[in-house]
Image (cartoon, rainbow, N blue to C red; front, top):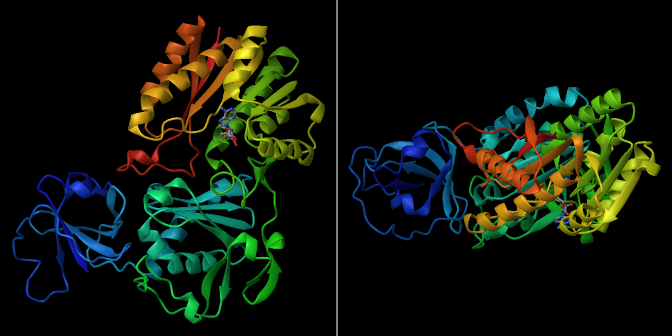
Length: 473
Ligand code: SAH
């Protein structure tokens, strides 16, 4: 095993249990398996820059401070700015199959109350938020859709898949390791149904240099991935099943015991959908119910960036008199329409508008249209620090236009899922937007990613989704 030795003072965040170490913090790398040096007692000589060593991508390493003191075990990512991701702070802990199974079981057990509250879609593992950096595991009814985004998790692929299979034998496993995060790590894109075959020569998992991956464990069967186009028939535990039988094009996932949201695991965004907005969709439902109570008729709702219409379904269920779903994706709007029918809600109260939201908002402002509830849930505008300023202008624009469309006494529900955007900055942008729109408005609620997307206290970066409920006077 290799040990990465940090420069003095660069151990601070690890001591606070933040799991990331950037390459510039590393002073040197030593091979702990070389017998000549007693790593525990010898004061380590610092060398600059860090020497290149032949360390396999995803290898388990130690991180030590400049005096050679153990800080944690971590996985090595050769291509990412985040060179090391801590996995355990306990010296001597074995990072093996049982370790991963225990972490997966602990994380998923915390979701049981949510599932019992009528949610068939839950995030079982939220990466850093659940002390498993580089791993997302979402459950949509009987399908588990997972994404591996770091070399560390990639190296433990077999452990993770076998443990999930053991913990959830009733579920099909589908892999959606196809996001931008994988490109940053130089990991290949990979999607498909995972089936379980007897071991064969081809099944040996290898790293990018063709070397067998570390930590591999003898298992009865081996997980093997069938990409959708070649997976017409897949064997799950030896039983032949078709891909479409395992993974339907649309899974209707019951949410908050109220409606079922359409999820497309194979083609949809992320692992299929946006579980993080569950709490805010429920908030929308309550808002619509209250409005109807108060005014006798349900609110007129505008759902911008609707995707498959989740917010719209909750608004309809809460008695909205009309719901406009606006999105650029015709495919998503098709799913939204089917979702209305599936939930036996009134299609006569819905419109599905395929249009750029910015253009739509401008046109409606010009026409003087008013809505009682306007929802703005855009995609991530700020991908990096360098795009934050442009992103802020984008947020200010849509919020100004959105606020201009809200009728007096109505609400704007506005969100940002950009991790780089703090709650304070977002609030300031919305305040500026209100000034520009010349409306007087109050914050009457704050909204956040739901509780199956926990924020690990040492890792504030696991908090990303923030929202405001704004009452327009
Ligand atoms: N509110 C949704 C998730 C929204 S995801 C839910 O609760 O499930 C963001 C959506 O914005 C995607 O469906 C994407 O197609 C859409 N989108 C991105 N840019 C857009 C634009 N300029 N105009 C309209 N829709 C856009």
